[in-house]
Image (cartoon, rainbow, N blue to C red; front, side):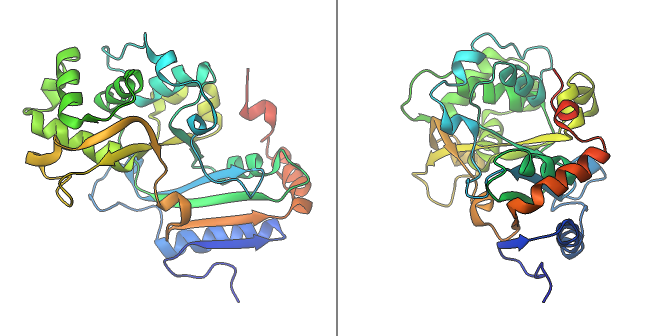
Length: 293
């Protein structure tokens, strides 16, 4: 019986050898024909449907955003962050992570070996986990980061409307008018990426200025927020998008990262961790390499 079953459903697979892991990854990529253009056909490989990896040293842990485990909020760090000069999500991410605070970002990598390191480098008395998830990433744009920064800085915990956020953005960032001709277009865009969240892969310029990001082949899933939809089924219709209400400081992990049909969890037995770390060290993948000062 093959380790990876070629069907569209969540799978949890226990392995005992490195060869098993490599075989599962190859079968997964073959089944989904990855990488390839997503639903929106494009010649830009940075937004191709592709495999993303995440390593966790204790397989019992759920995939979660770091802000869910701390009391400190993003708004305490982002109060003075300025995105007026063509900022992008990775300027924002680097800035927030510099302060080691909780964020709504979930770390991923496009390099399986990097994920394997984080799955095996700690909790040596526990089985680790390597997650695989195929997703079409979002192309980093400055207005996306500006919206995230504004949401993080909202001090009131009560719900607000998308229209209110759009009006706030248009007033503070006049440049947004260059990207959206009408407020209803901005409303629709905000609902789109705050509702489901998105995967963001850094441009090469961001990697060059962030050695850790470059060496880890790092990327991030930006979690969405909790919405209250008074108009069920019409959340994405431009004329109604602004009426949608959401809770700014909520964090929604997408269903796909809980037990989605494209998610695979490879459980690595604790006895295999040392062997994998030795294998990775020979390839130059060590703590000192991945986590430079």
